[in-house]
Length: 223
Image: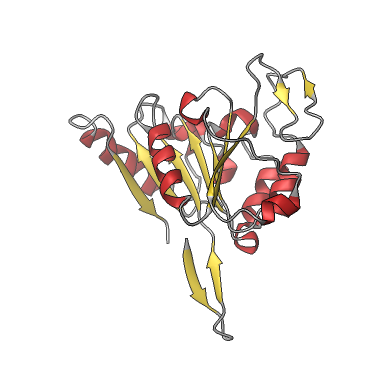
């Protein structure tokens, strides 16, 4: 969430792509909710989740298809589900609310969600909770384009996973920040990704401090 000045002195925000990593029950969802509530005082926030996190159940659903309605939103928190309770993948936020059977090998959000997000959201903060569930390891086309166009759309993006290995490897090249909670997963599957050495050092520091503070986390900026 940085700004810089052009020669014409017009402020252009440089969007952040932040990766949130940590083991289960380390406080990630609570952190996301608290951060979202703080940010939502001045900017609109969308949390895309898999309909399994009770901390987000009270949030109103956002219809991404309604561009005129979205244009009137200046702040507040909204959510979108990637899955239904019955285990079916939802074509999220379509007015007709169609469903199709979940394919365990298919981990990609429907194209229309990506399209509406990229086309209709400007200057939002978007959290993709448990992101491994809906994009593949090298990241899906919708996710790649969303990251590439983040500064043009002025959308700050957050992707969360239960450990370093739960973050799709393709996201690291776009990342600007890491937020690390304690995790015991094996990070070696992400060896070679952008910022890996710093990531490994951060993980070790957080794990050590988490011995006395279960919910300890640290933030690292790559710039």
